[in-house]
Structures are given as C-alpha cells and as structure tokens.
Length: 142
Image 1 (spheres, helix red, strand yellow):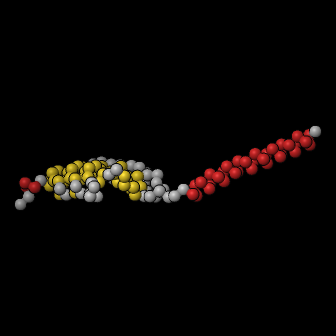
Image 2 (cartoon, one colour):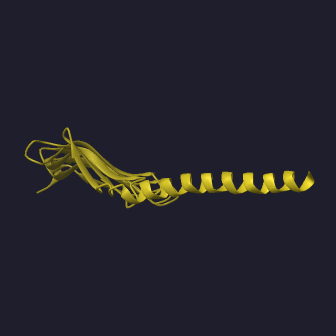
Image 3 (cartoon, one colour):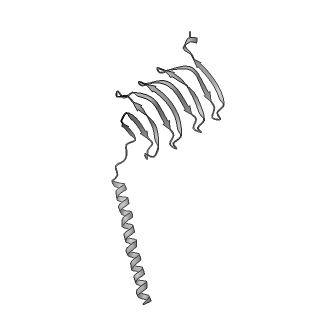
C-alpha cells in the first residue's frame, strides 16, 4: 500500500510539473512573438521619444501640423528625473527654460523670445548655489 501511495505521489508530481512547464513555455512564446515598440511615437500632435526598453520617456512635447515644436517640452534622464523644461512657439524657443544638473539641482534658467535669450538668466552649481547672472535685455545692447 505504501508503494502505491508513493508511486501515485511521484506520478502526480510529474503530471503537475509538466503542466506548469507548458504554461511557462507558452508565456515565453508569446514574448517572442511581440513586435518591438518604436522608440519614437507621434500621436494626436504629441511627440514622445523613449529610451531603449520602452520603460522611460526621454523627450515629450507637442508639434504643429507642420512638425514644429510648440508648447512645453520636457526631457528626462533614463531614471525618469526631469532634465529640462523648454517652451517653444512655432518651432522656436519662446518662453521659460529650466535645465537641471544630473543630481536634480537647477543648472540654469531664463527666458527665450523668438529663439533669442532675453532678460535675466541665472546659472547655478550642482549644490544649488548661484554662480552667475547674465542679463540679455535688448534695450541695454548697443
């Protein structure tokens, strides 16, 4: 009787073991059949660029029908931290810009008007201390 129970347990283990390996094999087959996702997607006026592996966005912003950047554009590092925010108007930088150091501290900030730097710009070191200020006021230029 003990032999029969032992054989039944071994036989049952083999049956269930085969069943679960078939499920694993099916999952692996499905993964192989999936097509790779594109690194650049443009849908409904929104441009999105991904890092390889498609787990993190690299750049995102809107484009006009003519394909020009328009509105707020953000870039990210591979870990998902924001690296820059730039405002565009009809393909040119036009508005506020903030660029970050890799540690997340602000590197510099300022304003653009039709692709040209305007007004005060501030530059910071990686510890967040202000290291330089520049004024791009057109009225003071000769």
